[in-house]
Amino acid sequence: MKLFSYTLGLMASAFSPTVAMTANLQPQQEQKDKHPNVILIVADDLGYGDLSCYGAHRLQTPGMDRIANEGIRFTQGFCTAATSTPSRYSVMTGKYPWSNVDAKILPGNAALIIDTQKITFPKLMKQAGYVTGSVGKWHIGLGDGNVDWNKEVSPGAAEIGYDYSFIQAATNDRVPCVFLENGKVVGLDPNDPLYVNYRKNFPGEPTGKNNPELLRMYPSVGHAGSIVNGVPRIGFQKGGKAAQWKDEEMAELFLNKAKQFVNINKEKSFFLYYGLHQPHVPRVPNERFVGKSGMGPRGDAILEADWCVSEFLKELDKLGLTENTIVIFTSDNGPVLDDGYKDQAEELVGDHKIAGPLRGGKTSMFDGGTRIPFMLRWPAQVKPQVSDAFICQMDLLASFAALLGQTYPDQLDSENTLDAFLGKSQEGRKELVIEGMFNYAYRQGDWALIPPYYNPYSKEDGEFIGLGYGYKLYNLKEDISQQNNLAEKYPELLGKLINRFEYLKGHTDKVTRY
Image (cartoon, rainbow, N blue to C red; front, top):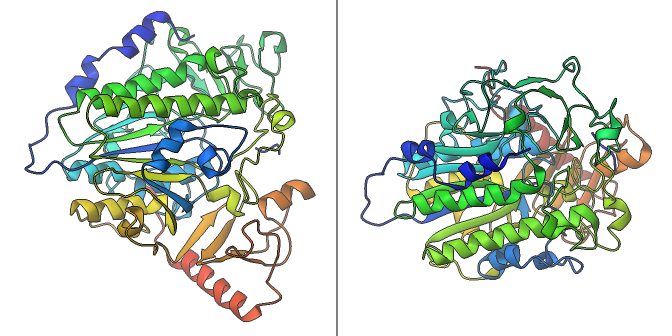
């Protein structure tokens, strides 16, 4: 479905401990009983059916499976939205994305969409005495909307609670194609300043639209902007050549930065948000993974991501941190095949079901858009199991507040479902409003409600998203693939669910601009 060079010198500096990292991570006050370390690993566009522990047979994911086998594999783990920025906003803030008008898919030069005066997940962890770090995918905005990339970019990760950050501003397919470490573009030559624009190109700069002869990967839709590393992107950038990333090196770079953070802070309680960039487009895995899946670049990128997870877990083993470290693995939203590049994802997928038994995927209001891989491992406290508890990423904030004995003044949508997260109870959330893309559905217990929406797309695309006339009502316990619409069969139940859905949408606190 079609919807909407990194230099050797830079690599050397990225793989070695930096002054900036060490300076920002001051020792925390020693505690009598060390809290468990907490690591949240979030993949990008990874589907419910993409992991072998969730039933994939053409892909083997032993790294990700290890978390499931040594901890809890949730069968009903949800994000709040079927697209990246809104989903990540909820993880960080504990708020529904539709409570903030700016929580939508952002360009790479968008302002930070999180109120720096409010509680966030990393701020909560700092409040509990943790050193906090963010490595990898970001995509919740940076700066004030008028960023000078040649100076320190603020507000950003530090202002929402991270002591250390090494991030990409947005997505792999959006400019600027550079990394920022503690708010500064890494490896930037002051004699070659970086400029970014999402409205028009810079004079004389090649683009995917006008210079296809410079491409090694071709767009299927969109992606006609600046060319970086032979790949056309969304938006335009000029200069900053020495700081530009090489897609093939991103995975190992982020992995080493994550390892580095853990090594520096191994004697403290730490919280690390590790945002994998795979398998989001453009899918350009390192050469040692190319062709390994037999499913093209998307499958290869998943194998690369799994290797990163495996290597990271081995680092925890080596440091003796495995027992008392909570590792959570999940995805920002559901999967997609063709997401704007001709990489044969559709042609080579074969009988692999990217969303498993679920209907839909990225952007969809069906479960394939928001029911995602979700595992938690804490050997010291959590017994290996499979849980059917209804849980949501948004609830991590309130749940960890309960675990760590923390309070906060803000009114949030995040709920304390700690017992479900730790496998002590099968009772999680009772209800959840989910977002497709500018449209919303409702889940209560085993029931899923999708309201009627006008379809401006093709019939096929509209049906994938869940658009169309009439209400849709599904019993997911009996119909996990959402094929049997029961709206006419249960009119009284339908009415109650509609009323509750509309009430929640109307009574959730909205974020005011700041």
